[in-house]
Length: 104
Image 1 (cartoon, helix red, strand yellow):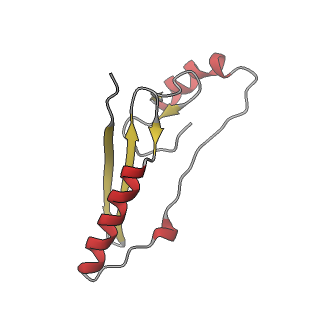
Image 2: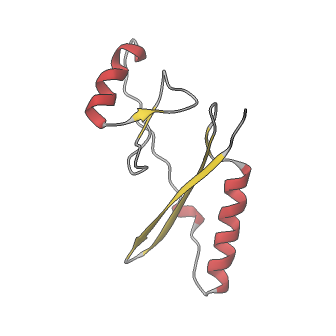
């Protein structure tokens, strides 16, 4: 059974608000069309309140360490970072379970 989940975070700071949206299923982890539509709705709501949305400030970071065998190194990085396997590519990618750090 295919179940789609939409997750996200709101980071509130003195100089602005950042909203992070992500969709994940058993075989996909990333931005979806639904996330883009929700982001547009958030930006429109911000404009109605007189706030400025700055899409150019969007950034994505992914750390890719070089290794001859990803499978051999994965347990080390998982233990060192406290990350979890990414659902759609558990043998190759790790993600911060708290959504704060970059993908690995």
